Length: 90
Image 1: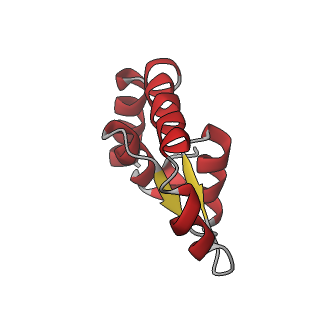
Image 2 (image 1 turned 30 degrees about the horizontal axis):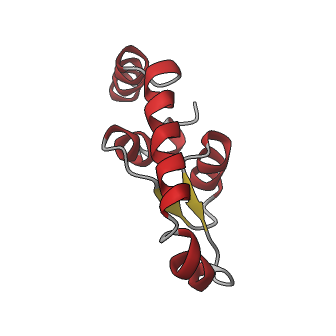
């Protein structure tokens, strides 16, 4: 399962309506790109992100709005509760 691979970091950020900032960690960057929920950087572009993208209010609001939609449609409380239950039982 996608969330089990990353120990809940992504879903915790979603619950707080915070865009995610990740490096090239494969599972984290995959989810952030897939869900359009934050910023992915590597050593070569970190300065660009911090100087332009993170301070871009429009992009920031886009990620927040998208996260809110994801929490209603894809990652609702029942789904997330089931994931945590599954992790605890395994």
